[in-house]
Amino acid sequence: MRKLAIQRTVNLELERIFCLFVNHLAAFYTKSFYFVHMQ
Image 1 (tube, rainbow, N blue to C red):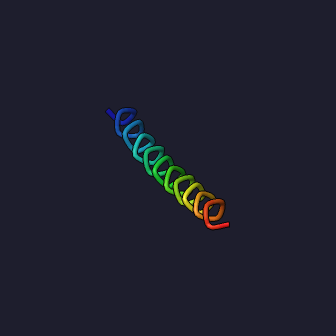
Image 2: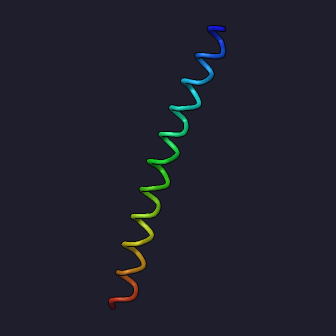
C-alpha cells in the first residue's frame, strides 16, 4: 500500500516537472520565433 502511495507522489512530481519544462520550452520558442520574424 505504501509503495503505491510513493509511486503516485513520484508520478505527480514528474508530471509537474514535465509541465514546467514544456512551459519553458514554449516560452523559449515563442521568443525565438518573434525575434527572428521581427528582424
